[in-house]
Image (cartoon, rainbow, N blue to C red; front, top):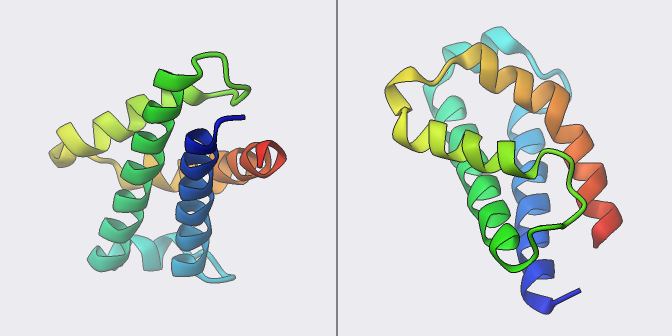
Length: 109
């Protein structure tokens, strides 16, 4: 695997770890929803994840990450549709999809 791809995979892992750190062990949706700083921090990490994935796909379009294209699409939605970002959707991504993505990234690293 190219060194550059490993760097982007590491960036994704770091962002996922940061999101989980921001949320703490309890991962309370109401607390997330009521804390603008927390929401913005998580949205920024999702942007980083999506941008890193986009760069990986440009180098290695067949990388074995199940939802790679959707990850990039989510990044675009958060950035360009900032006024339509839905807390419930972001929470679903964090709760359901990031743990699986973390496993995939760690397996590749």
